[in-house]
Amino acid sequence: MDAGRIRHPVDFYLYQDKLPFLWCPGCGIGIVINSFVQAVDKKLPTRDHIAVASSGLSCAGKIPEVLTFLEIKITDDKLFRSAALYKRNNPEKKVVVFFSENDLLSSEGKDLLAVCEQKTNILAILINTFVYQIFIEHRKLVDVPFSASTSGNSDSPFNIPHLAASCGASYVARWTPLHCRRLKSSIQKALDKEGFSLIEVISPCLMYHASCGNLGKSLDRMGLFLKNTQILHNEPTENVDLRESPKIKVGNFIDR
Image (cartoon, rainbow, N blue to C red; front, side, top):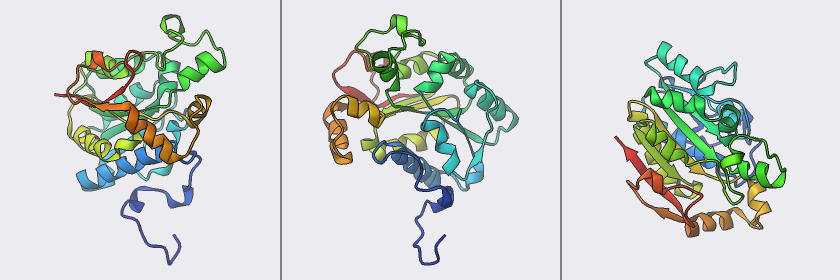
């Protein structure tokens, strides 16, 4: 660290020599990281209580590389199964998994659902980048998982919060980068929960955003989140499907 540099309160949780990182400005991942480390800083006495994991796939998979928490090494494509095994062997740790829909495409979601059904004490933070839509429409990959049951206008292969709730998740929420304070509050709640928790962050990849004719600036992107979201706490998760509503429904849906 530069001698004259003023420390930020969350510097302790970040590898400063790895910043700025590879993420595009305005993509939303930086906001997720900031919300996460601020939630941890307010909630837990030390960073030693947290272990983080990712598959390494996509931009979301690079998040543990900038965090100073213990990183769980994933050696196969069973991200959630490996995280659950670590949790069983280290019950004192709170395990946090960062992932994107790329991980769901590679495992067809079975890995996540199995751990959720077992009520494993894991916090899963999904950054939904909408790249599934790019695969289906732009690259014409007609053989990717779920394509047979997904209409041409869908932005997601399924309703992820509803899947988690149906499998017995203790806590389910959804936000966007615009709702950073609410996201931090949700992470704080989830860190206290026993059982499986899932927080979805709707943050379309900038490539997807540009392909829809909405490149603009970061402020314009936040304006779109403001215009197109509806906060509905305790909304039944079957009603929050991204494929069936003109508005993105966000909020704390399940809190058992």
